[in-house]
Length: 341
Image (tube, rainbow, N blue to C red; front, side, top):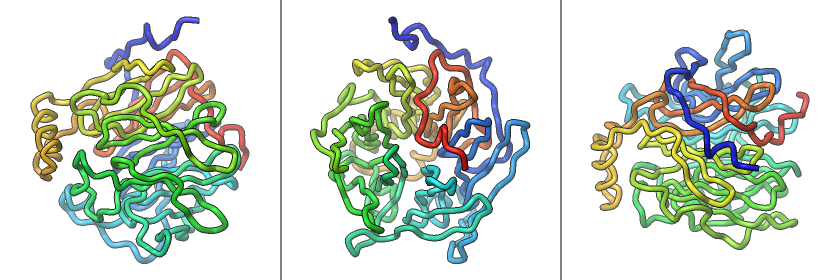
């Protein structure tokens, strides 16, 4: 069977949008009834129902700091819900990139901290959380540097993956260049790891005991100029869909590792300027925040939803809504898809 993605193109004029007034809808969870949940920088999530109504559910934790007014400072202080996953009971696991901890929140907002340290040290910039079919909870930590902008350099492999074991998180793999989203393939044989400042996708074999071994790069060793991959998701054909955040690209890696770019929304001159600073290890806020444009500025994640899992939603860091379109093949169901909460 020919891979459906090879003949697929996106018509931007036919994109549709959902959500209003969202703030930093970085990660999106989809449920079978059409409900979407998106991370929101006001401290919680926004629930968007299939009838078009929405509501924000803010976390009831008292020790958050108010975010500052400037955009740059807002990305460095206060609460920044980032990656999301459903717990087995329907609660929402939140990797909070602002408070540097993994949190868990009920659907009415009651929240508690699940982890803020690891091996007796501060946990670092918790980026993403994933629950697999065996109920194991995995998190990624992008960097141990408090100001994550100082970690945007090509020679800082201080990211890691940890797993929740006996009430605590333990590091199971490290040495990654700004660890971002992780996903498992259909059989959960491999874990695919986004290395944002590495410009590539790595994968590791998932052993029966939960250990990760045999690390290798999947697909190109570099996804191209301005390749800062962020979010990934599988479809049922085995294609791995992904985004590049500052250059605003949506791409696909085939099962053979070949790359196809579906959207390229970035400003070439601004991407080039950031690339030069990045390679020199000297990224500045002005050049970084000059990037980001198009249908989903600072394109950050890909989520399959809809009753047939064939609707693709694009999460981003700087949009106030979520674009979506129909894919040529359904997405790989996440572990929560057939669960009832």
